[in-house]
Image 1 (cartoon, one colour):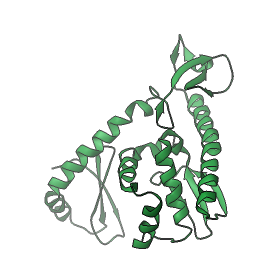
Image 2 (cartoon, helix red, strand yellow):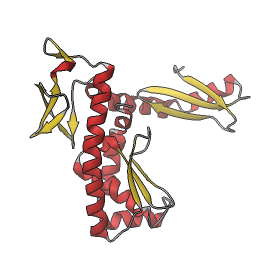
Image 3 (tube, helix red, strand yellow):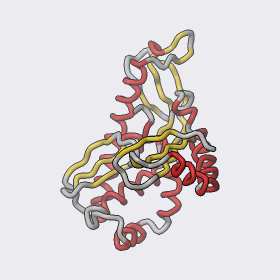
Image 4 (cartoon, one colour):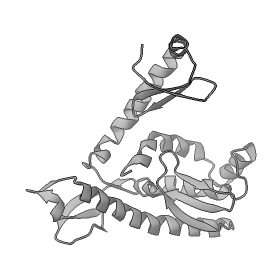
Length: 227
């Protein structure tokens, strides 16, 4: 039997969630443990496959979470130490203040994480707001506001007032993936759902969008980077 974390609630059915190579089970308060485990046995092949896929995804970004690798627009940045007080991005180099190093080795202290988060949020706001403006103008679509989000499971959102939020960590991903998320949210100003018509609108603009969706799923764990 699989090792899993069980959470009970008022829900009516048993559900499975696989994240970062771990299995989570949600079940009704009164669901018998035997019924839950019989459900897992029936789903064994699916669980094994999804756990393997999840573990691979987690491994692909492990260096990023451990601050051994720094990304910007899908590219690895070369780290150089600086006597400046703030982080700086220049020609593919990430200049990190040397106060965060001991004998030339990075020390990922709480202050370092806070400063890095602020740095990424700043460059994300600049880049993402500009891409949103350019693409919206090109498509002739109006939106009423823009802000960054750090939601754990979504790369973006568009509310009923056509205010768009884009995840700050999109700045880590390839430009074409970012543009897909921007287009996706702009299409929600026309269709506030994921109906057939919505996806047809997306496909008219990005015929190869399904490939990008798979890539975003592959790196979905990055939504929790610097959380």
